[in-house]
Amino acid sequence: MIKEPSFTIGIEEEYLLVDRKSRDLIQDAPLDMLPKCEELLKGQVTPEFLQCQIEVGTRVCKTLGEARQDLSHLRRTVAQVAEGFGLGLIAASTHPFANWTEQKRTPKDRYATIARDMQAVVRRLMIGGMHVHVGIDDQDLRIDLMNQVSYVLPHLLALSTSSPFWVGEVTGLKSYRIAVWNEMPRTGLPEQFESFGVYQHHIDVLIQAGVIQDATQVWWDVRPSARFPTLEMRIADVCTRLEDTLCIAAIYLCWLRMLYRLRIANQRWRKYAPMLIKENRWRAQRYGLDKGLIDFGRGRIIPYPDLLEEIIAMVGEDAEYLGCVNELEHARKILTQGTSAHHQLRVYYQALDQGASQQEALIAVVDMLMEDTLHGVTT
Image (cartoon, rainbow, N blue to C red):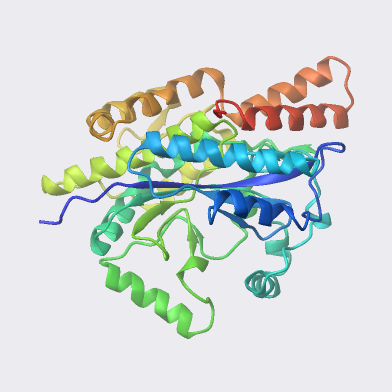
């Protein structure tokens, strides 16, 4: 029998940096900003492809409580450093009105190679995401759980949406980030593999062909991490509020443990055709929580609140075991209050109704995002 996984957790978030005067994204990152962050955060902060982006990552955490403290510290510290340079921090997967054609790439050899290979596709990546790592020590178990977890990925996306705008336009999508991300190769739902060895063989083919440098350039919605013994979930938008981030992480963590429980009982989650899961992925991208997802067994669309209650019931004992019941049940609050995408659209239309110009309304959204990024962040 496979030893029970550690079920440790790590969370990475990508933030956007805005000029506090114009509320637009910066084009040139201050030279001293990242070194100052690194001095305070010691290896937990890195640059991203564009200079307007910055990424943080928690340490390996044994509980969601530890992850809460660490991520709160990371958000607060980066925001404070940014403020010293006249900048604001927003945890949202797109900026309401910035133009991707004006952004500058971070000067780094790896990014230069990607820019050369991907051209305009990668230049459009003016987006941020959230990645949740869960410790699954056994390599073959990691692959087995990856093969099964795809089912719930659209549910996580729907609960995390924070990118309804693109270049000043209401896109009609709750997660426009996914539309941008889909243009990249090796994205979307993961492939299915019989074992870690088979997975590694396919990766090696791409490396030997010179198509990718390593497995970090396979950007599926969930993947075996190339750096850690984890299964990394990547489908979610970055959540503006810290509590929402922890909720998404809790659902993913508990779902993996539920799948492990099934395995040790000689059961497994039913395998569904990728075309069905892709349809739910699109519905989550387009509507978020608003229109429901397809229940494949019943063959009809089920309201998201009903699906969420089923999820909470299925992983309730796992949340108890892992000590994250509050984080799991916070999902009901997201349903009531809406995701960041709902909040952004609400602020935008309220401002327009009160006589603001379109640009003024978009600026009001940026102001809300800067404030909500620090919502629930402890001092």
